[in-house]
Length: 582
Image (cartoon, rainbow, N blue to C red; front, side):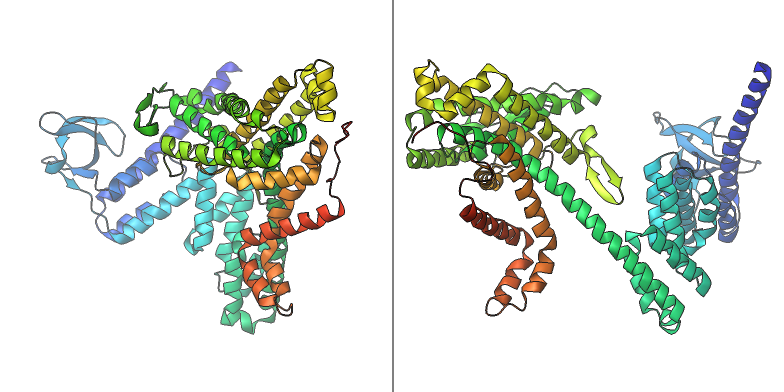
């Protein structure tokens, strides 16, 4: 049995080897053929072959690195020159037909490169495109299918048809069916076009929208009722699917934005609910967390040069590679929390502890600290935004029903859930949480019972600032990092706290998800709102113009809804329970 298995294995290895040699021999024959048409016929034989030798050989031919070695009294030999050059500029000559060295070192300037024309280059590109169809790399295969379908390359239709029964990957099969249908739309046969339209309708292909619209304008389509009806039906199916995809994408973005708002607002909910301090510098804690991630990334790489106040500081790099470098974000998360928490302790000890029970003065003071911190970040890291690269495990995405789910946003949603659970456990299952809740309910009575309220204030402020730092680390994976990064979120976070109920954890979560969702859906569907507002008397035109800027219009609508909600429930969704008489 083993002997039989060994013979079969050897046979398949020999077959694979012969297949590779056959492709090499074909390219060598084409290089030696007389006339462009003869060369094109031979190269066309390579269409659809899965052979790794095709790409480098044709690439060398196109770039004039395929040469003819013509020994005296012997036939010419197509060769490649490989390896380092010696003192005379000679390199090792490798036969194209065999892939083995011919035992000579040749100089490129002494040889004639194999000629190629524009037509031959087109044939080579077609061969390479179809070679990617047989690639083991899924991304290459999908890219080649998309290029053929979008280009409606009719000449490659037979190769696509031969490929369809060989595929087993559902995603590749769907892409292959889509490419076949798009190419068949170019067919002069009405029945083939009808079948292609029915296929696109069943696939609900988003990429086919422009092609179907172009087909609808075709004179042949306008004359044929069946073709016009089929195109209209297919387009309606695609547009219905697009509506579902847009809704799913908006919902996903809403969850990720809501998760970030929850993390930022948790800190505000704790500090504002406990101390009654409106901390306008909370946004800068977000920026500190994001810049901490940027510094960690550079330390794991080649280091970072900083010059705050003209003082040059060089942070040495660890020069890590591979997964060690990709793991920088796992170290950046706790560091972002600790650095932002440390900055929060300094702020509380240096400024805020002198301004308790003076809300207006604390608001103005923290606003001033916010401006100072922004300027400090500009002096340290520069006024321009910096880019934080996402690690490999956060750079990809999943596609579910044509909805793109980025791994970075999925990570934010998942980690935000863990943070909410962690904060809830800290507040309800630890002695620190007991102290925080006691001070929140009645500060004076807690102090009379021996609770060191100043220390509780400091720890609470550190916790809130650390959570903002974590939010900054997450934001660094979604966009650029700049000195004013936190300003885009701090106002929304205050609204989350007020709507949810000051100091209430559940209310903060519900409010964060609600405001994030309302903001994203408003931005997505603001053009529809703009159309609806067009006929409003007196202000219709102004509102319609405003609605064209979806981001601004979304913020305005969110603010208006929140104002109306607070008129109905001034204490928010969940009013904080307190035993205080004031």
